[in-house]
Image (cartoon, rainbow, N blue to C red; front, side, top):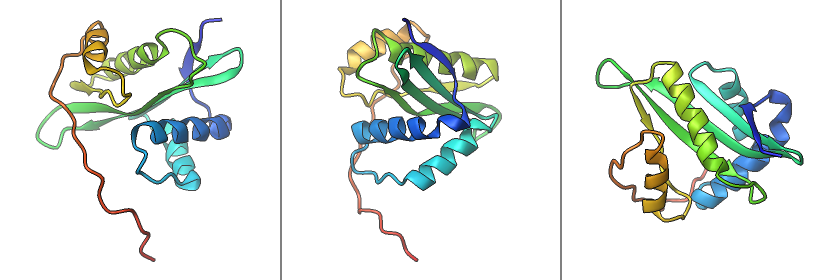
Length: 156
């Protein structure tokens, strides 16, 4: 069965949180994950018209997650969409990440976004990802670098 991509539902929160945690650990291992904060943010995103929370489902259940947001430009008229997370369960077949990215791209275009951003944090070779996403109209726009900062401590 080919995976179906659709909007996430609030009642799927346990699976959404599981995929979000796995995705975060894969691309930002130094960021803490808090289930209650993540649950509240994802629940808000599901009901927010400026966000998309899409899932992929196969015959075993949910196997993919994409969360993205569109916002107005800080610098003038226009809007920018950025994906927060794209996660694909290891059991998923084929190019599910690409299909999730396609759903995000179509969503952003449908709401009139001026600039659509995505980033490859998968650990897969960047040239291959850029080549694949170019089929959706994306172009290389630089590179991302990062540095681990101070561990988060809640100031109460």
